[in-house]
Image (tube, rainbow, N blue to C red; front, side, top):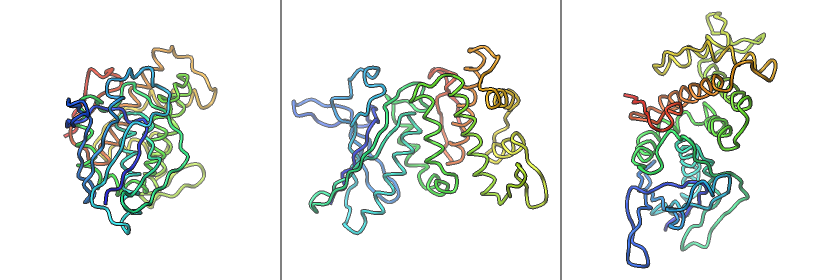
Length: 291
């Protein structure tokens, strides 16, 4: 039997073409091999050439994800895999990809739930036209991604990562949300290392005390990243303590962009991705390779 899952806000071009009723073809299919499952994602044809700016901010019932050869006893496992895939797709295109229902063909079983989320398209980490890298991300990284999904609260991480863009927040709120995301990442990293939170600081087992900056430096270094956090730390302190910054909008936006790129790279390294991703600061024109 086939499990047909329904996704919203995933507007992309496929890697393969399918035939249309009128005798033509349309590139709206992405085949995937994930977690031992044979999966096909189909973009609804009416959205292939739709004007994306007119759909921004809407809940768009965009896609069907079909899992082949599913038995009734496997549904719970498959649904959990699809839930995790939906978060990974959300991260890849910086849009709130929502898994909102499924039906098991031939078994008269289905389940739908209330859901909300918005379509967004602005400087995503991965291209939505050439989706080969999205396919690589899901297929190559799903196992390592699944291992850290709960340990590092990646569902929350991805929601926090997307919220500033999807909700079109003011720059101070964009920055504040990213700073909360950094706090989330460092806290889950500290827990994974067995560090103890006491007196406002994390402490290692050998008695080393970590500040906000020193713990983040270690966290990034753990995946092979050497980062400079001085500007981020100073702006974080200013916004968290006063709600405003004396920096110009341009300077704040530059720090916001570099912080997004830093977090993007960290998440990709965490799930062991190898390849190129688009830089937010590069406006989609420049990319960085993780090897």
